[in-house]
Every structure is written in C-alpha cells, then in structure tokens.
Image 1: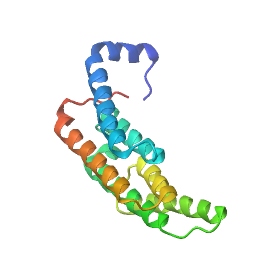
Image 2: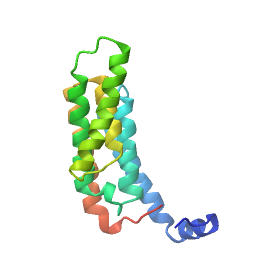
Image 3: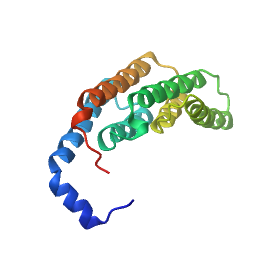
Image 4: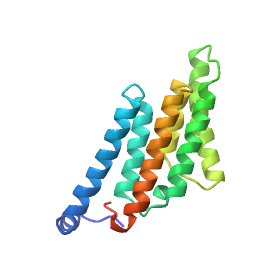
Length: 161
C-alpha cells in the first residue's frame, strides 16, 4: 500500500537516523567498490549500486536476501562473462549477444529461485566488457561484502521504502 507524502515525512522524522546510517552504509560500500573496480566498468558499478539500494533501503525484501543477492549476481556475472568471450564480428551480433546475456540470466535466476534484478545489469556489463579477472574478482568481492554487511546489520536495518 502506497503511503502519502505527509505520512512518509512523519516516518522519516521518527526514524531519520536509520535513513542517514543506511544511506551512509550504501555510500561507503560503493566507495570501496569504485576504488577497486575503477570507473571504466560503469555498467557493473550501476548494477552494484542497485544491489546496494536493495540491501540498504529494502533489507527485508526477498531480492535482497543473501541467497538471492549472491546467487543472482554470480549467475549474472558468469553468464555475462561467458557471453563476453564469444567472438563478435558485427554490431548486430553484439546486440543479440548482450541481450541474450540478460535474458539467459533472468531465465536461470527464476529457474533456481535466486531472483535479484540488478544481476541482469551485471550480466549486461560483463557481456559488453568481456571476461576480465579483475572485474570478476571485484564484483564478487563487492557482492560478498554487501551480503556480509546485510547479514551482520540486518537486525538494525529497517525498510526505508
């Protein structure tokens, strides 16, 4: 059920510390990821930003649970990276392959019940940039970091949306 703006403001006034702390946690996590990953892989950074939003703003949602966060992101990461290995000889084939990375990631996540929507963005980024060990390691580390923070601080996190 959607709440009105005055109701949202009342909620914010009551729990403003949670809003500040949880937004700061998202900032700190992504700051570390950006330092490690660098700005050259913006598609992956964007998907990790979406994961951080889910983890810190919607901590009780199923898509933010550890199994879905880690499983979904790893599915997207590996499907995208594998598709990124394919030799692309034309723009049209590149478009088909990157779109396939998203569709295949969605399919596998739904089949194994590990839905995490930002993982489709990770698959897209990996398909575009291809297999790169540094990117795989950094994305994996970022996902594990988000999962650990979520697990440790879950009793203190509240849904902000």
